[in-house]
Image 1 (spheres, rainbow, N blue to C red):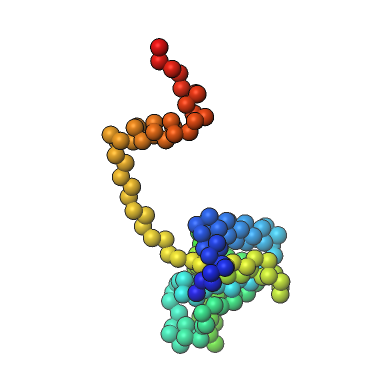
Image 2: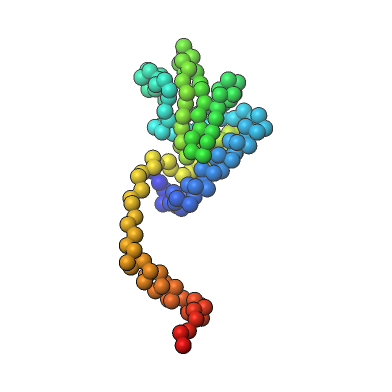
Length: 159
């Protein structure tokens, strides 16, 4: 649910900024060998191998993962995804957790929140193809150019 006052935090520009902030913060923590925790939206996480149903049903909408020890050592990040290996259930079943950066709702060092993310992650939809009409592009570009009075004086007058 998006609150009306938080609509500005759902714009593509803000989401790009937030994704970059999450990436840079995690890379910084890696560079300082600093263990940390992430809270994330479970619906966007993939587990390899998949977790048994009895383990998955114990998760709430948002989960907190503590990255320390082997889990921290196994973690990796790229421009869009964060992944790490963790153990689940009483059998400590190993699974690789992979999630989109924007599905991370918070990053914590000890008990301190260092990043809070209010942007909602949506799976990337295929962008519609944009058709460019060659015959009218030149005239519309010239119209746009000439509509600005400052540009008119830059054009040479024909004698």
